[in-house]
Length: 113
Length: 112
Image 1 (cartoon, rainbow over the protein chains, first blue to last red):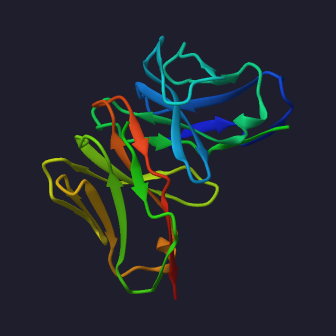
Image 2: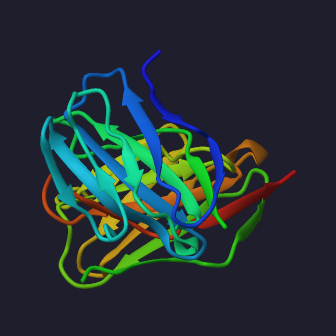
């Protein structure tokens, strides 16, 4: 089944404790992206990647890191999480000829205490 | 920067009626506009894409219009059903092929 898989689905952590949210897609898509979703603000893009070893900042990159060492994986790293990073996070991928139609994962709900 | 406005208030309609959701944007016109559906606890799912040179697009009970003069897209669901209850998001391209900007979404509730 074609899908984007995120792990974990739920995570509670404390301020300053490094964490990684994994994202993997099995559709051989070149483009991958991370979003956060907050009430009233909609989906905001954190980082995106056009291909392996090519990443760029989205609208809200502060406090986040990403890497793209393989085409299928695009982990999101929070080196020192803070409470304002409590949010619902989505990974998405997109094939190159689709006019950026996004295929989303199921989401990761993160709480930073 | 580009701003997108969708009705923040939920839209409540009766089963069988047509639901119409609005997406307004400011600044420059995008090359295309997309609509997604999001159910609670799930990721958004793509529904329809309409290009700037298209006035209307249909898919089964769904219809999208795109008016670049008004800077507005309308999303219609005809013969609505309770199963259509969800949050609907519109999204516009920022740089062709690179980024999308999403609206906050409108909650649709269809009552039987």
